[in-house]
Each structure stands twice: as C-alpha cells, then as structure tokens.
Length: 223
Image 1: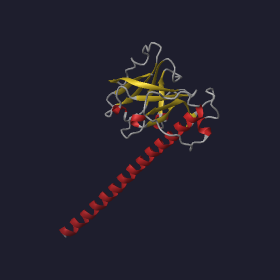
Image 2: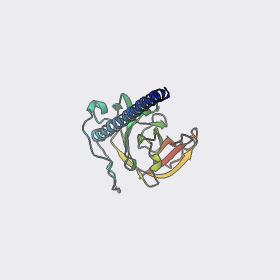
Image 3: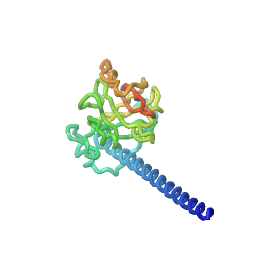
Image 4: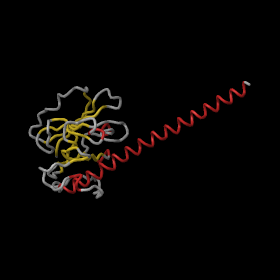
C-alpha cells in the first residue's frame, strides 16, 4: 500500500518536472527568437537607412567596421527619398536617425522623442531636448532598455572611454562620437542633460544598471 502511494507520488512529481522543463524550454526559446528577430530587423533597417540617406560622412581614424549593408528592407519602411523633410519611420514610428556601437554590436534606429513604452520595446529613442535633431551642436540624450540579454543598451556597462559611437542623421551625415565620461546617476537626475558643450556636438546614452538601482550614463563628443 505504501509503495503504491509512493510510486504514484514519484510519477506525479516526474510529470510536474517534465512539464516545467518543457515550459522553461519554450519560454527561453521564445525569448531567443524574439530577441533575434528584433536585432535582425533593426540591423537590416539601419543598413538600408544609411544607404538610402546617402552616408555623407565617412568615419576616419578608426579600424572598427560597423557592419555591412543589407537589402532586405523595403524602401517604404525607410522613406521614399533622401530629403530630410520626409518622415522616415520604423515600425510606424518616426525616427531621428540611427546609432551603431561596434564594440557591443548595437545597431538600431533612434526613435524621435518621446520615448514611449512601445518604442523602447523595439529600439532606442531620443529623450532630450524635445524634437531633438542629431549631429547638431549641444547635447542629445538617447535612452534604451537594459534587458540584460544583449538587446538595446544591455551591454553599455562594457563600454569604456575612447570607444566609438556612430550616429547617422536624416540628412545622411554620419558622425563618430568618442566616449569621454562614464558614471552612474540616480533615476531622476537630469542635471547633465542641458550641459554646456561649448558648441561641440555631444550625445548622452542612458540606461538602467543590471539591478535597476541607478542609471549608467555615457557621455560622448563628436570627433
């Protein structure tokens, strides 16, 4: 009698373990597929965007290769022509340009502010100033999630002073920014947004730390 009950218990336990393993495998598989799809689509989009807007500025003094051109995105997803006055969109949202960080394999369109929840599930976005224009004098803050899985700004903690960030704007101008300052700030700290750049073009990347207790702030200046 005891052995029969014990056998049933072990059978039920085994079934529960198998179901849990299958569920976990399915969850991990779905996340991997989702992350791969997001990264692959954004990579193709950025390559086509850079090709279509003209790539007016070629990076110099660097051996880093941001990536090759892909041709699997239709022109309608980027814009009908190279005129900067035309609205260029990604997934239905207007973009301000694109960002590439070779060291962390980042290659995403940059949504025009405001950085809504839906936008930040697809790419990164400008936060400051309002209606920010990339590659112009002053500081532009770009925000992205840290999902701790390689997407968006998850690997910003691996960046160092001197690393390169490529920003391409709607006019096709592609500028190399060099990181010169990295620090952590409180979530509501905006003191560094409106900083005096002395006429230089600067960008600030902002994302949360792995434990979400603070923000990793990266400041970079155009070469």
